[in-house]
Image (cartoon, rainbow, N blue to C red; front, side, top):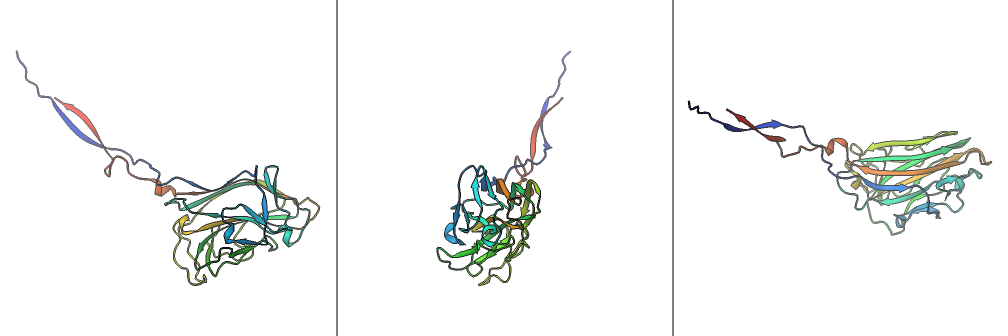
Length: 263
């Protein structure tokens, strides 16, 4: 007896989950374990110091040695306590980087407060090559900004227009140590209306900044070394927001062809 059978191959579609694909990679702004380098003396932070390392006042006690950035806490006063910092260009960091991730190890001695400053700057005029960005001699942990005429500035830590004190900083109290780690989202930040000659609008990514200023400053009560501070393993990265890294894989439908045999 002869039996006829029909065999059909059917192509069916099965939905698959979205595939996570990075929009852009993280980009390094600072990666410093202080195993080398030094602090250069200058009474001001200046435009022509971008990407040239750490600057401080000539009378400052900040040094890079023995694998740390430190202040020995043996001389109180404006110059010795004043900020040590650097200016880093954002050129070439890439698009889609809407967050800045920060981490570092710290130790703060008795009677001392440590302040961390992180500011985004954008040219807003016609600066001279050596135009002053800030003063390296402010007291009580502050960082004096002096570039508002030809630059706009925003605190990456708070989104505010940074002043000359410590309001827009991260502070660390006496007799503390540990690892600080935090991520800051730039979207939602905007330029202050007081920027001259009128820089306004929203900030959407790290590329809205021409350069970034990172600085540490202290406020010391003692001069006997008990209030020494140190910083190590400083890492500042520009990264994309997690939601911006999700894309549908395998085409717009995310469909997978599966072969099924029917008799």
